[in-house]
Length: 332
Image (cartoon, rainbow, N blue to C red; front, top):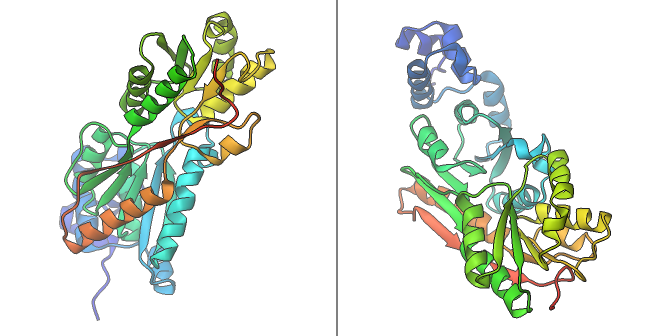
């Protein structure tokens, strides 16, 4: 019978204290140097160390586990799992992992280093990461060897990482073209940043509409955003159509406009992006760009399976989008 690896064994091999190894295992990397943290992570993974609690759970449930880690960004204001896009993505991943006889384990983190201890603790088949950036993936690749599939990755990628993206630019283009064909003359794009996928959505929107498309940066936090909208109300009313880069922000601006007596879509049409369940839960129902979360989940899990089997995997997979027109928009 193979002898179990103990934390003290790993500490002894590395010439460290058991406490130092434990700090890294539990994500308390501020207690040790970065060099020490990297050495410990590699040793934990190479030796297949699993804490006792994890060993018990894995023995009781032998199904392989895929970890899903979501960036708990400040813009979610501690409600990341309640976000409509995140919830829809998790729903699709849950159904697809179950169909494959896998277990799904979800974590939210605001520190990329916490993913390392999570991966080491549970001996995962792979990771699906949502909401991080290319630099994060490269850094994580240096510490964890299991394969990743990531959503909405822009920028620097790394070995054994598959980015499952959507065609953000074409999605934005479809909204811009639709507004132009509806006879709008001045249109506005709302976003809380001007990088990565939101930048692509804005670029596509501008290409689809042409001159007359403008961009407005909005605050991430809701109280600040509402104050911003009140301050900019007269500027916003100069436009006849608004494209928000997410359904959340689209519903947000609809509620604001309605609250100050602006008719949607009579005075201002509003469109969003993602086609989440929110679209059918507001009045008027929201025009949005649809992405297929089921297709995305399948592509992510297929990539992890192929990585594990030693098969070739595309570094970037780009899925199509489609505009769904509903009651929040109208022709001029």
